View 1 (cartoon, rainbow, N blue to C red):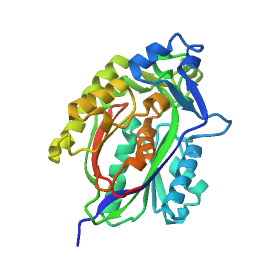
View 2: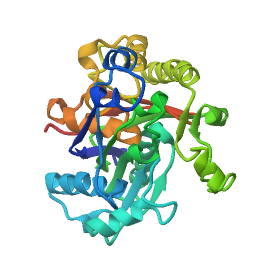
View 3: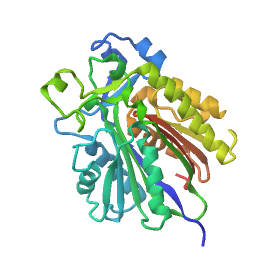
View 4: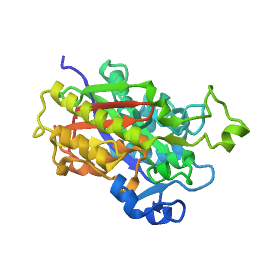
Length: 331
């Protein structure tokens, strides 16, 4: 019997309609289009507007499109792994909310919190369920409504983040296609440099924490950049070395869209040319868990069966990782 790999068999994405441009941000904080573009590569980002709308609502759009594209019913989904930093609620899990909204009545699910590395962690986890033979259809969702935890008076964070959601379906493959290898890393000392100061069990919400604006994302940019630019590049190069891949062997690099300079450093470390790098940061900013699946969605038509693809990410807390996969279908 051939070894079972977990292969991506469909991808889809969704971004909200409202476009928040650098020009509009100039009216909100002391910044400029030139400053933002030169340091991050971002020109605009999408924002989810509308009362009562959360991360699951973007996921509904993305997942329903995936189901239609794959030609399957939501009842065929067996497991939903929802990778998010901005769940609809502390509990219940947004995976369960999504299952109810799309009618995935035969699925169980849970949320995975690994900041910007979440989608990679989710793919690796979902792959284990497929490879073991326990499940045949695993839905991995990566999405965030980052605007819900961003202080739009803090120019260190408000220029970076946007809202969006993407998803991928994992199914068994016996042709040798699908996820080949993964490297996942964490370093909890990073919690002091990128995270949220209040709202958890250590520091529950009080009038004081709200007044101090401790329920917004906090980032010490220079420290985070230093860690990210090194570790994301290192782990991408490591997975190539471990699998005897050269730059010529790699069809595509799919990097987390945090900062154009970090993306460039990762590509350079791998020896991959710019035309092999998926980049949409200029239009969407950093959608946290949404960046990698949104790239796969936008580039899907260019992907060919058998393509060697490397995914790489770095996230708050700190988390980072890479995945090497062989694309399983022609669009």
